[in-house]
Image (cartoon, rainbow, N blue to C red; front, side, top):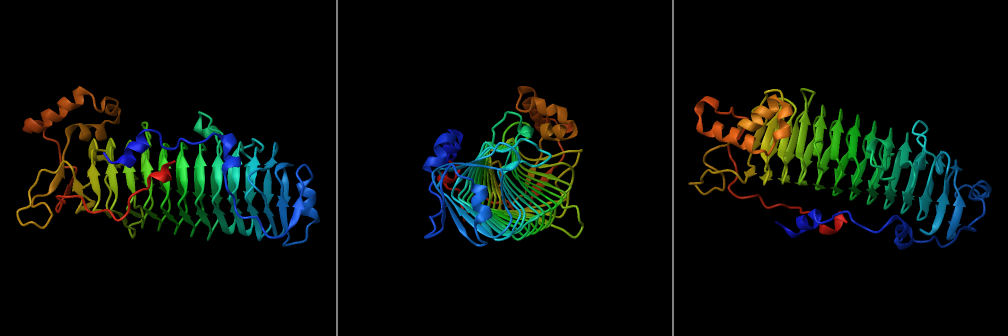
Length: 435
């Protein structure tokens, strides 16, 4: 077992407490000049008095929240400058060309219907960089925005045991042509990208949340080089098309609903070079692609230590699984509704359970890899049997399926050219990303 996976199992995501984050964080560099706003004075009054395009410099200490910004402005502060809110959104931006940098936002109102949050954005050409947002219902919300840049921020959710009572860490709603880069979200509900297209999400870390990133009705987005550890679901795409999901580490999505990447009625997706480690289900696919003109491609991924590497809600077509690695999984494929995966193309994948041979020395098996398992077939037909997954009774069922032709399981999938050795990966996750 590789050392970085041992690190994940032994406590990835453990870090300093909330109180130390603001003091330890190094934020964006202080502007050369600007209007100083002493701690304890009215930040709203300073904003109202400043000319458009001005730079306000916060000082260490407390400021009262409930701030509204409706015109071009830049507000910078060190992490020890604390903007505290108790009602509504602590900072609400309704104008264009606003930049918020470096300081800490604490608290907000608690009304879900009003989307109370730490930072609520509505506008164009907005920048939120290096903020720490904690104890807020929602973290950072971008609503009906264009060209927003969220980068280098830390959002700490409430961590309530009931995930549904938490607010979203980062939320894009009807937001286009924007970027979400180098952010850390933990103990939150979801990172949401809904009704939002042409956005770039990269190098983000989401820990101990519900959905690491949830796309819905969002098209032409790229998600890459990010880390998801101990979330209930790493990434889920619903009713979206032309997404690229690549070079992400998705680990320890556990429990009965644990999924690395889930796809529902979405098409023209590329899921490439991701590492799926110790998730209950590596890839979950439900009626995807839905559009007859769409295809989905899953290539160069590593799926390890899952109960099921690939789960299909039912039989699907127009999906290709190319040059992936399936190792140490309970089942390669599981299909619901008495279906199978024979309508998918599996080609050139590596399976640690393959027992074929390679007489011509081309690195590919001379006989196809076929996955047949009676217990998996029965679980697909009778989902309630999943409660017995791993039990000796199910092992006996598989033994019966192997030795008694009368109960021989049907073929669920096949790969005509399986690899004898794993394909060399062009990308591996870094240990530091999981902290």
